[in-house]
Image (cartoon, rainbow, N blue to C red):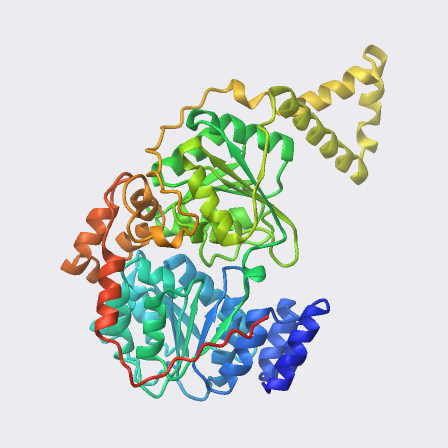
Length: 547
């Protein structure tokens, strides 16, 4: 894209927003047909900036949050290059979690359907024999997690000498999880003539070093802060004590009547207890975390997408990359220690131009974490007064009345008129209507006792409003480890295959197996490794010209 075109787009953005249509992106006609069938019309900012650069064959580093359309941003240029006459692997996508790998595979398949692109996902926790058989069918694109990819490479069931496009998705997350050595091992098997596309929500020095070492003069496309802070999301916080959280949250459910909700907990135990407690109080809820079998996770996510579940309780495993649309409310039962995790969490709502709401429960000693998050998002959260028991009951009644009105609009009551007339001879219309409301409305949820085990509070953070300066020295204690074990870390323990138990992962797993553990040193170690291997022969160009 020419500089004058970029300038015109920037001016248009200032005047009210401009997004390229996919038909303007010089994509294969078969891809455009699939895009139209899916219902996409306008490209998102990250897509508008990345796709033209990638189609020119350039290496690109894309910086954007979850929910901005990153999969299509790297998927469409990769699909455009695929030669379907060749039965070889031409595209490789590395993702941090199996959920993201599966989701990415599904979306790339949809985008490449009319071009008849074959896409295969490989990840731990699934039958490796079945994956081996699938790889023998010569897919054009392989999507997978680092550990399982290496298993296949070592078994010689995955050969990468024909790869033309390499994608590193959620690169910051993969480094956080200690995957640097695995990624380097995989890249060593990919031809140097490849095109490399790297996507990351944040841009620490370790990511820049990857850009220097493994990419050829990469262009850096960055979605500016206002796009990353989810301006369409109303962000609230409730200051309360640990033992008050659950009752307050259920009362908020009754008052706010959310359509589709995600509740984030810090640990696996927390998620299980919250899901069980919500079910006891009459809510349709399920929990998802790293210890669940893969088939169970996928069935829960499917039920959530199909509105069979109203509330999904999750560790941070569900915050990254999962395509969950229509979420109206996000409740942070536990405030995350890393402010970036907060942005990923609330990114589940307020998508595709829709408004959303997030509510974060904060204990008094965690207020410093709240301030760090506010500094990152450049938006102050609004304090929210906990609803009273009376307000919760009124909310339930209001919801019941709304349900009745919707049912009345559907009509179809002719068959029941005679029975209704008989009832009206003995009871007043007011009493019958009141009974109907009572039957539909839940009883006061707080009357059902639920015990949620208290979690160790986060370590006190010094009053350093910068936030970033504390990440290295203040990562330990509290439940950071429990979060990683219950969420992202859980994926590492369950990847399956032969490499999971080797010596280089033993320390990581040991540190992340329990809910309350000591901090790991993976990030420091990985950063040092990357630094020592830095290749100064390649350039790194920063382009902050995105919308």
